[in-house]
Amino acid sequence: MIHYQLRCSAAHEFDGWFQDSAGFEKLEAAGLVECPHCGSTQVSRALMAPAVRKSRKKAAPAPVVEEAAEKPAEAPAPTPPVSSPPDGGGMSQRVAAGPIPAQLLAMLQRMRAEVEKSCDYVGDGFAEEARKIHNGEVEVRGIYGEATEAEAEALAEDGIDIARLPWVPRADG
Image (cartoon, rainbow, N blue to C red; front, side, top):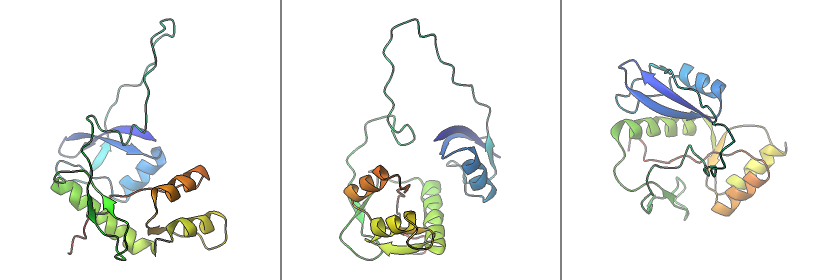
């Protein structure tokens, strides 16, 4: 993961985490990087200070970093289930407690629409289908669906890249 300080055309600055610099450039070119303050898709990288390591002469303990892209500044509140998956099955999705800012909700709704338009829904057979794609048993294509925590961990252990997306209600309903 790579962290960028970003700036929109209205001079709002915000952080962004991306798979790599090519990932940022691809999303930016597609207009999918959006300012959380005003919704502008005219976004560029802002000037950032480089990360400079201190001398190792001091024996200070190193900080532990766990998934910096997803770790909140404060302890998160418990996350209640909020919706059923598209097939009406029993696995629930979770979101952080509290209201989602309007610009973020709109961006997540556009992301959901793009996933639904571009990928195949495989329901709770997600882990099995992801393995088939990874092993070359079926055509390579984008898929989405549900997986249990254990299935997601097993996929990660086997080197199969997946992404968890916040699944918000559709913009049209």
